[in-house]
Amino acid sequence: MRTTFVPSRKTLAEEMEDLVKTARGDKAAALVIENARLVNVVSGEIQPGMSIAVQGSRIAYVGKNASHTIGEKTQRIDAKDKYVTPGLIDGHCHIESSQITPKQFARAVLPKGTTGGFFDAHEIANVLGMKGLRLMLEELRKTPMAGYMQAASCVPSTSREFETSGAEIGPEEVAEAFTWGDDMVALGEVMNFPGVVFSDEKMMGEIKETLKAGRVADGHYTWPSGDWRMSAYAASGISGDHEITSAEEVMDRVRLGMYAKLRRGSAWHDVVPTIKAYTEKGIDTRRLLLVTDDRSPESLVDEGHMDFVVRHAMEQGVPPVTAFQMATINTAERFGLSQDLGSVTPGRYADILILEGPLPEVNIKTTIAAGIVAAEQGEMCGDWESSGFPAEAMQSVHLQPNFKPDDFHIAVSQEFPDGTYTARAIKVRENHVDTKEEQVQVPVKNGLLTLPSTGDLCKISVIERHGKNGNQSTALLSNAGFSTPAAIASTTAHDSHNLMVIGNDDALMAEAANRVIKMQGGVTVLTEKETVELPLTVAGLMSPEPFEKTAEQSREVSRALASAGCTMNYAFMTLSLLALVVIPELRLSDTGLIKHTDEGFYHVPLLMEEQE
Image (tube, rainbow, N blue to C red; front, side):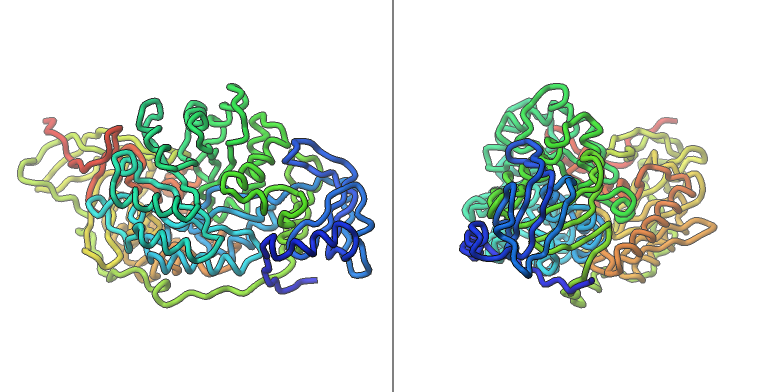
């Protein structure tokens, strides 16, 4: 029977007396699970023949026999010796990167066993500021999930010198966000790590407000970690990081008291190298978390969410109970919420999974969220209201659809007469968040840089879309694979989310840009044979449509890119990061080409020197 969910997660103080009454048998439980093979992530063991009694939104009793808690109206579930685990928790996730709203995200992941998460909404915050952050929080509160929000720390990710975002957030705004409720639990990933290491006033102020509010701060650090700078970063109070791509980087962070988040997104395949810190180096796992960071909508449908990541960790040699710990209790402890989340123990929220089949398959049969059966056999058992979206969120692309092919020409100065020159190109890397600087030979004719007649070199252009200054910068991109005339335009361009256009044909680039503007945000792929569109009308980042429809539209984007020769795994996810200036090595923002080094980041010219 389908129902309308009315989320009612209460504090332990509010429910404590009823929990105690239920545990001693003076008050009938609302729900009892019997004959469970309990995966106890606290003790690290599997307990057969266990029962769990639930009262309200929390667990009242765990033991061999819960018959004393059963009344006439108690809902009873016979687990039939199936594995029962805590609900899975994502320790670092951007909902907007899944291109769906918090409501649709919850609908997508609850049947797959994700009952909670720690969400950094810095994507929408870079477009709408505090209003966007509040919109995400209010929408998340209406779902059955244990959804916790983080105050966006880097809006913009660096400074106005390097990029133009739609808003700014500083120490005062961070302090305000922490007054919105106990579900505002942390400062989101601090990507401006040079600003922390060298005591930028804004960054230090945001961290200080976080610590004053008794919250924790999350990190994003991509410098080599073998020198004094990582200690300086950790000394600020930043205590977790997900930008980790090797076992050595995991160990460096853990040794400094930080939590290491091992990422397996759609296009970021970092668990394989990073998990070796445990499987080969033997490091203690209590500070290791499994996270997704970014998952595309079609990967949520095709592969899953945290269930997929846990399964993937086991495939790398992690014992099953340990893998579940890294997606439940470890995550809860990292954010100081283990009294509420992360284990099937008395007093905790009744976020419980019943699995079908062997534990390593992570095949979710039943998802219970806050004591309510939310999903069965991969399907939601009910629905809940959406908060809706204000006009400001639905009209966030402040551009006119009048781009022409010559807007994507690359003019050069008179210092470069006709000839062939060395230019910098951003080299995209499949399944990696970082890029490389590649030096390529390009012809200049009549004051314009043109693409070589062979190879897959194409143009990339970033256009300010927030109505601030109208900046546009155009550069070169290599290794995208385009083998036919094609273009893609998108307002998903981390993190300032300006309009990004990539292609090897100026006319197609102009048309793709105009189409995205007319949609008020989204993705358009154009070739000479077809047009594929994915409207993302909520802040130019998310679709209000059911996640199933968005997944199919996203799948069409991937197919169209592949047909044009861009065959990278989840190509759009990788391309969407090319404007993220805080990740090495070469990026493009609306202000120009930006090179990232061990010393920091700075603007660099496109053309380097004459060759012939």
